[in-house]
Amino acid sequence: MAAGSRNYFRVGLFVFGALLLIVAGIIVLGGGSLFQRTVTIETYVEESVQGLDVGSPVRYRGVKVGSVSQITFVGTAYNLQPDDPRYFQVGQLVTVRMKLELDALAGGAATGLQLEAIMRRLVGNGLRVRLASQGITGTSYLEVDYVPPERNPPLKISWTPDFFYLPSAPSVISRLSTAAEQVFTRLEEAPLEKVILEAGSLLSELRETNRRVQALVAGERVSAAVDDIGAVAKRLRGIAASAEDNIGNVLIDLREISMRLNGFSQELATQFGGNTLRVIAQGLRETIAEVRQAAATLPDTAATAGRATRRADAILAEGQQDLNLLFANLSAISQNLRELTESAKRYPSQLLFGQPPRRSEP
Image (tube, rainbow, N blue to C red; front, side):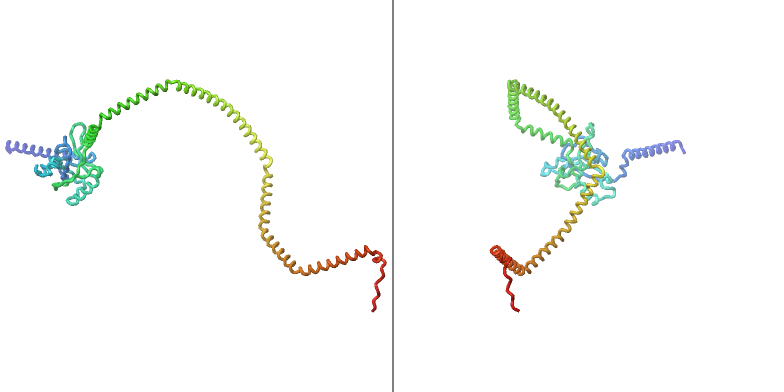
C-alpha cells in the first residue's frame, strides 16, 4: 500500500472516531433524551416571560421532565390579524410550547386518545404550569405542579390549539407584584388628608388626656389616697400578724383535741375489744333472728285470733235467749230474797218460832 493511501486511511479512521466521540458525548450530556419519547404541550401566559428561553428546563417538583421548544405570541402562532376582535383580547398572550417526557406524565405506553384523557384528568385535579425564577442569575424555567383548581381556572380560549393545552398559573413574583399594586391603589384611593387630620386631632386629645392624668396624679387627693392605702396596708399586716398568733393557738388546741380523741378511741378499743364485741354482735344476731321469726308467725297468730273472735260471736248469738232466761230467774230469786230479808227484819220471831206448816192430807 502506498504511503498516501495509508495517510488517507488514518485520516478517515480519525474522523470516524471523532464522530463516535461526539455522538457519545451528546448521548451522555443529553442524559439519554435522544431515546426518550416526548409529547408537545402548549400553554398561554398572561405575564412577562423575561429570562425564559428556548431550551429552558421544565421541572416537576425540582425534577426535569422536559424543555421549552418555542416561545411566541398567540396572534403570531394562530395568524390573528389586527382586524380580528380577538387580537387585542388574547393576541398579546405569550404562547410557550414545551416537550415533556411521556414517562413523567402518564407512562410511556400512553398514546393518542388515552394520553389526552389522562391529561384532562390531571388538569381537572389542578395540574398547572407557571414561571419560576432560578436563583439570582435572572434565568427562568417552567414549573409544573398541582395548585387549587378553583383559584386557578383554565383560560377560556376561542381557537383550537395545535397541541394539548395545559393551563398556566400566575408566578410568585406576579402575585406579589399584583398584591403590591392593589395595596398602592388602595393607598392612592384612601383619603390621606382626612386620615392625617384625624390622627392630628387624636394626638391632641391624647396630649390633653396625659396632661389631665399628670395633674390628677400630682393632686392632693391622690397623695391622701396613697397615704390611706399605706395605712390600710399597715393595718392589714398587723391583722395578719395577730392572725398568725391565733392560728398557732388554734393549731395547739386542735392537736390537744386530736390527742384526746386518740385516747378515747384507745379506751373504746380496750373496753369493747376482743370477745366482748363478738358476744354483743352474736346477741344482736340472735335477737334479730327471733324478731324475724316472730314477724313470720305474726300473720298466723292474727288469723287464729280472728277465728276465735268469730267463734265467740257465734256462741254469744246462740246462747243469748238462755242468758235472758237466766237473768230473769236471777232477778226473781233476788226479789224473793229481798222479801225474805224484809220479813225477817219485821218479824224475826216468825222466822225462828213460827208454826210449822200444815200437815197435808195424803
